[in-house]
Image 1 (cartoon, rainbow, N blue to C red):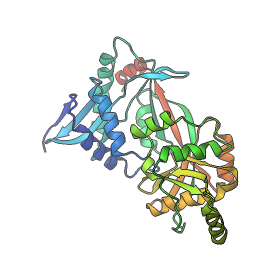
Image 2 (image 1 turned 180 degrees about the vertical axis):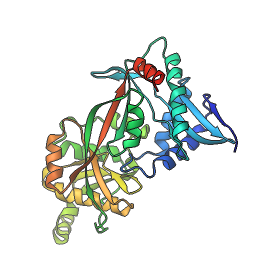
Image 3 (image 1 turned 90 degrees about the vertical axis):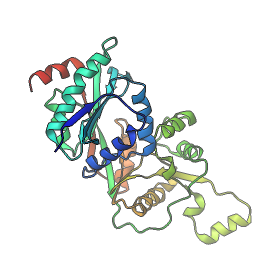
Length: 318
């Protein structure tokens, strides 16, 4: 067996091997958030412009582990925050993960010496105890949680899954303006930017129209009168293995049940056995609607934070 080497230089093609490793390293984790090649490319473009933001571990020329961080940004209530990645490895190797982390902390200190961040931040599912314990051992603490509400889709029959609109962003914005629980709908520019950066999978967006919710004879009558069928809901199913996450969901109050049922069928059609949502801290009304429709609280996104000085000190005590 060869010797593992560590590389900090970032090449333009590293993102493909990194994304493939991340998929392998996380494929047994429950409700792992969906990612995409678009998202991986977008993050890699940032790495190319941010010296010191990646460390790659290679064995005989093959990537076996990596760790990274993203440029700092202002986070309300926290100050300047650096999203700091977990050291993913494949095959799983605790010692290599520890080595990657131990190398990255001083590298981050050096890279941000002129303008150090106020805090490092990361999130994990509550159902990932090993990753959270790894970070706690290194000085990180739980900061807050966002609930994950979901429903089983294994027994959901396939069928109507809605239309794929040509202008997906505009279709969702129409539905968002109808939803009584969406107080501040995103702007077109905000949603478009999230799509371009790969944070939202618009290719999986579907719309439900009023014609999908009424009797066929009534639909024919309206068509004969030349009445256009309006959008009553829109959703996406971002699928990762057996988990489908509703990154976008909006509907009017009258058609909530059928739009949710349509989303669940879409998730099942794409192989998922569970469909759910990560809920914000101010989503009490949306949570009540989910509960009434049969969704259960099953997990959480746990945000963990650590001051950079504390991370440095914790390494000395390991």
